[in-house]
Amino acid sequence: MSDLFLSMQNVSKRYTGVQALDQVDFEIRRGEVHCLAGENGSGKSTLIKIISGVVQPDGGSEIVVEEQQITHQTSIESMRLGIEVIYQDLSLFPNMTVSQNIALNEIIENKSRLVAKKHEAEIAQAAMDRVGVNLPLGELVGDLSMGDQQLVAICRALTSDVRLLIMDEPTTALTRKEIQGLFRVVAELKSQGIASMFVSHKLGEIFEIAERVTVLRDGRKVGTYSCSDLDDAKLSYLMTGQTVEYTPYNFEAAKQQPLLEVRNLSKKGNFADVSFALAPGEILGVTGLLGSGRTELALSLFGMNRPDSGEVYLNGDRLSLGSVGKSVRAGIGYVPENRLVQGLVMPQSVGRNIVVTTVRRLLAKLGLIDRDRYRENIDEWIDRLSIKVPSAQSPVRTLSGGNQQRVVLAKWMATAPKVLILDGPTVGIDVAAKSAIHTIIRDLAKSGVGVIIISDEVVEVHGTCNRALVMNRGRIKAELDMASTSAHELQDAVQQVSV
Image (cartoon, rainbow, N blue to C red; front, side, top):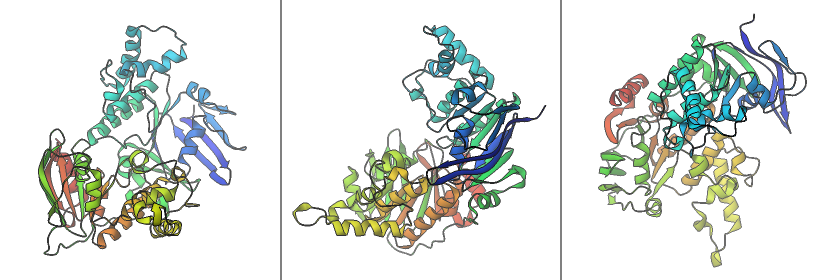
């Protein structure tokens, strides 16, 4: 009997004008942990959709599951074969309880019209017992942490006879502790002979959990490798075809008045006694686990989360942090972590998203928009940030994650900010796009803008910033100079203060 659960040969898929996959071979062994890596647009999503039966491959493709030749695989057939997919949005019902969410698939499959709460709880408990997790069955899923919601989605998949569990960017919104919990669950699945497939941009996590990694680039398979034969640099090169290097940002603070000063800023339940200074041209990292108060602090500086006490000064002038308008007029810009919801108006064009913060400057007589200046402004930022887009009129939702992030940056850079706060500036962005975004950030700092980067990716903070603050439970626990601190030492600092 073969040890392969899934084997795919010559898999191709062409959409109108786009070759999403080009003769890709792919395989997963029974009970292995396999990672699928590649930049945005490399074909990862299309491959997953073909495996799960959502999309049909082009003619000539061969798919074998459990030594059974598959000629036309539908989503239902895929699930019957034991293939389950957990997407980033988890597809949970936040207004339903944990037990209801976990038991839902089995109830639907059995076509049960009436379900006793006791039976529902038994189904959920059995799924949790399989992987040794304990969740509050009666609690609404919307009230759980992201880590626990991820476990609910896994338990729901386990109510069926799952043989392959595919997880798309499963750790994006998880704390380090939650990630370790997820990895323990994956290890338990492996012990039961269940294969797991990760799609991830976080290289460190790939090496921590996966046995093998398959790399896609531009719709083609680069290769499948044992993780023991790779390191960050080699995997980055395989994914991008480029050598990507991270080096701390060299910065020497001149003896001048700080650009931004935060003194004993506090907000009950969010953060307490936060004090720091930011110099012109400096890139300051703020790191720590999710829930450490980092984003709440950023929102206060941007006028969206009024602090209870403390003072903030910009160029020596005290700021009133009562509204976003006041912060923007003072010279503070903010790029949120969730660009899809908070940073962009997805149905609108790239051009409109770029000028939304500066449209008043483009008004002519009678309060009408000067169309020439409008187009010139948009074209300038598309060119300056190398935004890849067919037309400025294209909806921003049609862009890749990296190009969407460039649009958000353009929107705020157009305001000529004195301080720019970037919350998770490269979340969900591939390696090459991350490098390009980091270059833009450094160039912005070199122009004299003070930059604050909030991130839980230690490699990003270490390789982009000159100094880092480590937060835990709303307080600054450590301040480190990146020139004299290694990435491992920074990671250790984050974990030590979080114990």
